[in-house]
Image (cartoon, rainbow, N blue to C red; front, side, top):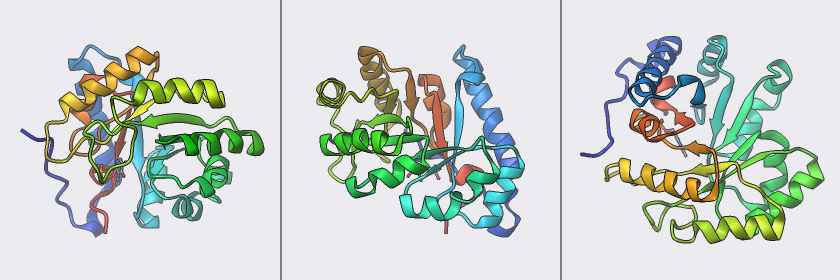
Length: 234
Ligand SMILES: *Cc1c(COP(=O)(O)O)cnc(C)c1O
């Protein structure tokens, strides 16, 4: 069994983001309850990359305030001016970050989920000082050890975290992973949980549209959901 599940079937024009969000929140609550967890310990990160403005506005109208983006430039275009209007926005960077964009990322985002190499750790530590914002950082772990995916290898993760603490004074708040598409996701979530426990890290960003319920059962504190909330991306 893999973690694929059907995506919503409404046509793009008619997709009702408020109804979709209510469905996703209900599924999160059900999965939390089944696992003996409180749904208030799980944050829904609405992945808004590539989505048209009318859907972003509709999502903001539901009260959703936590959003995920995978590109710095695109996130500026979508969120820089909205930040002034919605003071309680929480923006998560969930895509790869180039070191030369570290300062821009620290200036816009509240959470950077994709720390995956020492050079970037240094750039983020410098950028936090330069910009003066105490951005939270997650280490991305490539649990499937896939060549095309970013992330620290699961066997290198402990040493990596200890190094960034010692060398750069950078204390990550948690871990993030994207399991391989063609494998059951449970073992990958379990592996992430193990590393987080060893390192005393509380935040676990895992689970997307197709597998967020499983992720909640395994202990996710943040689920990153795009198409199940907004409809298909173009
Ligand atoms: C796009 C993306 C998501 C959301 O994917 P969906 O399948 O649309 O929910 C989650 N996490 C990351 C890192 C992404 O790039």
